[in-house]
Length: 385
Ligand code: SOE
Image (tube, rainbow, N blue to C red; front, side, top):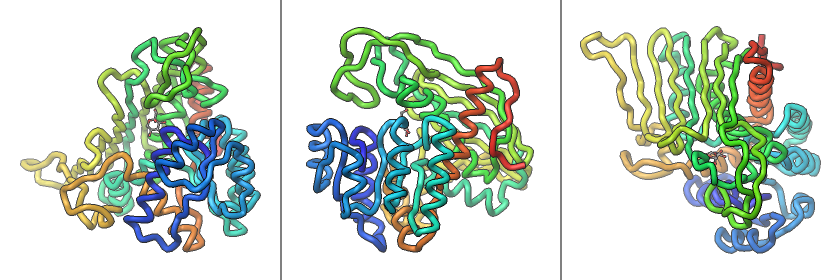
């Protein structure tokens, strides 16, 4: 694993729990964790039983005892690490968004395609696909339960930047993160819309905004999503919020919102899909529930049914607790690790592929281009049709 902060912890726990809860056909061995700060990486190694620490990602990728490289670093290093690992014959799991630019994402998708011909697998970490309620939503759409999709409504709302004195962490620097709320959390809901509906966005019209233009420079120690303040101030170079509308390849109308300024909303990932025969609605703040509307129900009883997605017959749930006991944020990382191991063992390409990651990146690029051009309608490069 390269990286040891928030995502490094989430992934470490995922690998460990995949081993314990999913009885995988290949057993993950936590060989080495890498990071520039040897002390911090060492502390993660101690906490999660990684056997070795490396301070140079190249050394880690070249280790003969490493078969898979898990990339949990900021976006500016994804492309170099992923391409080097794939070319060295190592499977790759890469955090989202796939890259900071379209060019990097294309390079990564091409490397993944070449590697796949030699049985080397690549997956991008859009973890929320593996929330049981969202995996169920996709199943219901695939079974035709909501009919022809007319509307997709997606939001990812957080509020951890409301305080203007919150430091300028890497997520607020364009050269490290690529973009702001758009790439960090908007990417998740774009991917979820693609995943749940099976449709792709073909064009967008967008607005982005940066509400706070300057913040204290970050200090040394990480604190949740941000850091302690250091000395001096620096410019915020990414968007704080993005809003856009779009159209899909199957003729649905879509609206999206991504912000870190939705006061009171901590991790509200909302997706609603309206079809000719019914609707589905989800909110991560109540993540074990999917609201399902069947339009054929007698009008006297019609409405949304609150389906508690904790039955053994629901996706992933049979590996966990008895009905009604519920799952949390971290379970998606275990499902992700288990699915990747299963695909490697089966010799198949795991989803989301780097091509799926590139499809999201193409939407991000179109949103940025539209916002920079007075919200002008902008086709999504590479979209079908
Ligand atoms: C911060 O906004 C963040 O940690 C994202 O980077 C993650 O992808 C998301 O799962 C939670 O919020």
